[in-house]
Image 1 (cartoon, helix red, strand yellow):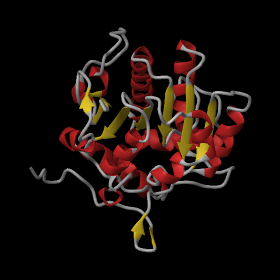
Image 2 (image 1 turned 45 degrees about the horizontal axis):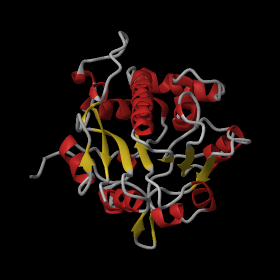
Image 3 (image 1 turned 180 degrees about the horizontal axis):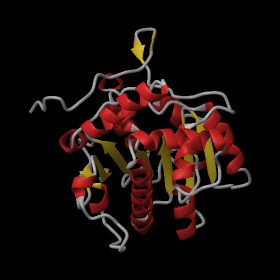
Length: 285
């Protein structure tokens, strides 16, 4: 069924006729979205320029820091669920900085043998992250484009830490809105999950169409003159389509707070506050 207005116009550069995933990167001294997220999460890996950019974002979209923290809380719940399900290998795609309760910190707290490979397209983020992870034998960082799964899966970091015969959890948290349909995200997800053993999982979060966010992006660009890549929004049924062939675990594709909540008093239980859905799915064979 066609859902009018469910998606924005896909964006990205075109090299040799193939659209590529959008890049929002800069020099090491330039403000960086990954460091902005770290700032909102209460981390320490950011500087004055990052904090200024964070303030500019929140002028236009005051809810963004809360949304980032809620996404990180979902990530932690998903990691715990997957470790309890027997998963000990994790591939986090489009991960940003590996700080403030990211995958390796949660998984290795539960089982020190858990192995994690992070992947991000931004070379500045990758370089900073490699330094942060220096000395951690079971954790690595790879600078690569998640929409090129063959290159990611053949990278030395992945081949060293992740056994293709073992079940693995693939994470795509708050990144698929940067992957237009032309880059075939469903096929990309399938390639990653099928590269590992039966029982592999994928955990995703995805922004749904949000008129308030679109208005905030327009205001941000008008006020500060900083270009923002366009998003590809998807509704929950689009997320179901992305996970075709996999078994979506309970409670299904739901607003962030409704996925196996901890029921902590500070957690928001009002789905109308969110235009982002999440899901975890399993490959049976």
